[in-house]
Picture (tube, rainbow, N blue to C red):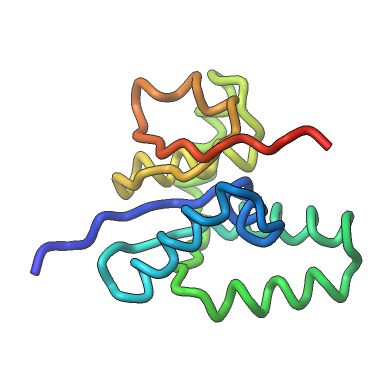
Length: 141
């Protein structure tokens, strides 16, 4: 059986899922497909940290701990970062107007040939060299 298609989530994707945004339905579908081993979903440990600090700022430390426990139960491969990934992310950050955490998503997507799942418009500048599945952007509150 060939290797399944790999996807990599940025923080936007998981936050859309946890906050029950319309694009969270697509994230849920991807998670189901990963559970069925039809696809592989990855998340950089850097972006995991981004999700956790965002949840803690909005909802407190206890909610962040609960969110971490939920993520650990999901069919998501949390990828560590090594020196090579740090150097690749630094190169992306130096050349494109993305956050440092998002530079890790881009560097890893290039390395493992994964499709980035995001709705963050800052990723538009990197569409020439990574594939992106666009989620609906958040509604202004």
